[in-house]
Image (tube, rainbow, N blue to C red; front, side):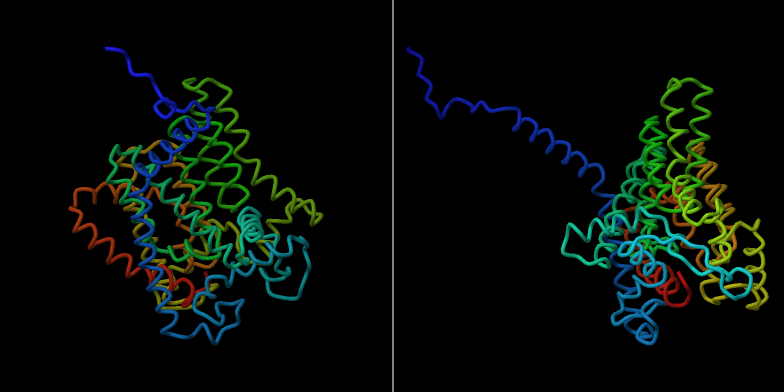
Length: 420
């Protein structure tokens, strides 16, 4: 029997490498969705529930309409999300920096004029870039950056917890817990918190997987986002130092991580010092314009004592946020012990403890402790590991109830009953 001659339509089309490359990218994208999709969806749904409750509470109370737009007010409930620090970030995104140390008459801690140089450049830079390539204004751009960053943060938290516990379910639950954590109202706001947590989580994951150069680069970028990157820099540097001692990854890559990690933070602080004509200009600005500096925990002690005794004789006293902050501080020893019992990698332990020390050891707005501790996501690992034994219906009920409540304690209390 003669072979049937092939026709042109029967012969596979021979093209350049584009189809193969396209298929490869599709496969990679599909793999990422399969791996991180459940955690990101869990986070997004829970966060959306809490965010909706938060907006409803703001609308119901109506107090935002009586406040200046810069200080927790606006024409609409969602305008609150761009007030306070959000206002400063918009100023940086629109006008840039003009660092200066301008002396003004006032009490100690407020005798330097407040200046936008206290706010690090990465987040407002992303706002500016997003507003230029999209039809969104600075407010919309800031919200978009925060929401997208929060999804990357959820994926990073999932990656860290799944790597540590070896359990996908625990990773998904950890991402869900971060959505309803105290202070979670700052995750979807014109604030830099979600951007920092995304960078911190992925930097820790890179250290855990010995991707040292990537860890150093990510930490460098984190240092351009918030001064709290000092805790991450120290943790990455310590882990790299131990790796150098063990010689399991050679010398060059851990050393590169150590050298790269502090560049962003030191670079920005040094630039502010140079522009103000005083090398400690950034720290003087924080101390004398914002009353925010490391005091060894005296401010925290005075605030807790004031809450327990029913007194408001400490700086920035806000009854409801301060009571919640006190309860959070009292739970920290339990969460720390539970975390350490899991024997996490050095980078997670060092990063978490350094974050807690920097938060509790600094004078600031005590009611914001819940927000300041948002980066300490490893504290949730033990809870996630313990909750993985629950059935999905029970988990949905627990996390869903937490999401509803978080609209109040994580959003309304933070933004409306205090100063975020």
